[in-house]
Length: 284
Image 1 (cartoon, one colour):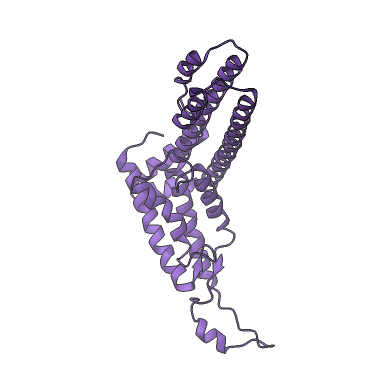
Image 2 (spheres, one colour):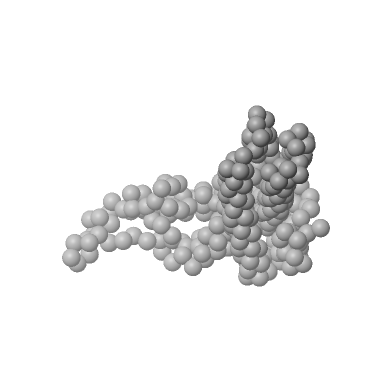
């Protein structure tokens, strides 16, 4: 999705404003993302924003901006609408010390949860934040998905070429010198070098051929598994993105009414392109 930098900055500024409001409430009530993360819950999601604005890698796997991470984050953000309190950290819960002294019958400490007003405020702030998150990261998720699928396809093609070379070499249809030259067309340096070293010193035996083919088969299976995971994650992101937009069509009007036309334009473009199947791995 091609958008102007100013429009993008407008949305990021709104996201940061929502983040600051949410962080105050969650710090006050000890709401966090998981037992292993002592920070307010919103910090987990805003880590993606920090990574993005810092220029982190948007193309690789196992990065904060991988499509798997973004799809997971979006699904978790959507669930907060129904569970605004999430995980309460009992050690930092508001009025925790006082609540311990107010024991319920049977000796159990009374739980001190945020009042309904706080929960409703969290829902509203997270609702807006989720829409902005879906729009900002739609193109990032799309690029990560398409780049990694293309890389996987290229790696599969390399494996197919190597398998063909090994078969022809083992069947006497190709000599070692020709095989070495053909291997130069393999783009993966580590894979090409491993096979070239195998052929460098001697004639390929039947066992060595089988071992090499088994290795290639394992690599191919790993690539197919990863492509499946990436495809599923992208589908989940797109599905979540469309659901978020469907539930929040009023936000564009609200932004325009508040004079935030740049942010509204960015969001409107994101919604339109998602509805047309663009920004979802099918753009031209």
